[in-house]
Image (cartoon, rainbow, N blue to C red; front, side, top):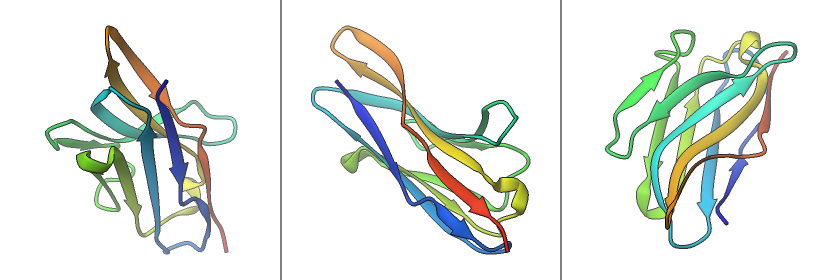
Length: 119
């Protein structure tokens, strides 16, 4: 069974920076697309940024120019570097990965890490 574990959330002041990471653990799997989603209180979960296995990235308009997604395939890890943070970036951030393990193809989710942007 594959697990995704996020780390790096916390409290940061407006204008500050924060980095998130998400590592996949398990055995005998291949990771394809990976991404970060977020869900603010009372709102639907939304895509923040995605990255393909080849490194192609896409971003939500609200974070373009401020957030950077990257991945280390050797470590089965995806990162989200966030800068110029705004109060509206406050949310639980979830890691997502499309994983093939044997005959199974499945979308996996992490448990989430809380990011709070506040003075």
